[in-house]
Amino acid sequence: MKIGFIGLGNMGAPMAANLAKAGHEVTGFDMANVSVAGVTLAGSAAEAAAGAEVVITMLPNGQILRAVANDILPVMTAGAAFVDCSTVDVDSARAVAEQAEAAGILAVDAPVSGGIGGAAAGTLTFMAGGSDAAFAKAAPLFEIMGQKAVHCGTSGAGQAAKICNNMILGVTMIATCEAFALADKLGLDRQKMFDVVSTSSGYSWTMNAYCPAPGVGPQSPADNGYKPGFAAELMLKDLRLSQQAADSADADTPMGQLAEALYTQFVESEDGKAMDFSAMLPRFEKRSRS
Image (cartoon, rainbow, N blue to C red; front, side, top):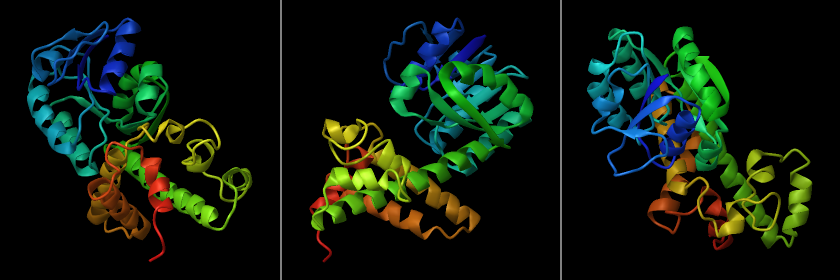
C-alpha cells in the first residue's frame, strides 16, 4: 500500500518505520530534519499525501491537525483514507472528518495508547472513530502498528475514548501517589502497602502495572529517576482536553477538573516538567496537609 505519514516525531517515526518494514511504500514528512528507516522523505505534507491510499498523521494538537488537513485534502485521491493518530480535541477531530468526507475521503480519528515503547514494538492500542468503511481500510495498518484496535463509533469517538481513558488515568495516578504518601506518614511499609492494595479493592493499573513507588511492583519510570514513560506535561495536555470536552458537552467532571489543576501546578509552577506523570509521589512526599 502507498502510505503518506505526516509527523515523524517520537511516536510517528517508529510507527512509520514499522509500516515500511512490513513492505508498504511509506513517504513521510516532518517539520524537523529527521531520518526514518525505510521511509522516503517528502518536502511538504502535501507531497507526502499526493497519490497515497492512506495518509496517517501524528501531530501535536488540533490547530495543527486542521492546518495539515487544509494542505493535504485537496491533493488526496477520492476513496483514500485520512487516519489521524494524534490526540486532539473532539471538536477538531469531527471538523476534519467532515472536511474529509466532503472531499470524498474516508476519515478515521485513531489516537493511541502505549507510548514510545509501544510505537517501537508495534504493540499500540488504537481507539478509532469513523465509518465502517473507513475503519476497514485502516484496520490492516493498525495490525502492523499495534496489537489492538477498537472501533469506538462515528467520527470523534476515538478521541472521546482516549480523553475519557486518560482522565481516569490522571485521577487514579494522583490517588495512588496520595495513598503512598499517606502510608509513609502512617509508618506503613511500601511493599506491604503494595501487597495489600494490588490484590484488593484498591487495584488499579497505576498501582499494579505502573507503580509510582521506586522498588515496588514491576519496573516503572519510578525506578529510573522518574524519567518519562508518559511525561507529566502530556498528561496535563490530555486532562485539558478532557475538560475542554466536558465544557463542550456540559458534563460535570469535578475529579477531572481537580486533576487538571494539580498537574497544571506540578508542571508549570513546580518541578514536574520533563518528569514522568508518576512523579506526583515525590511531590506529595514533600507536602504537609497545611
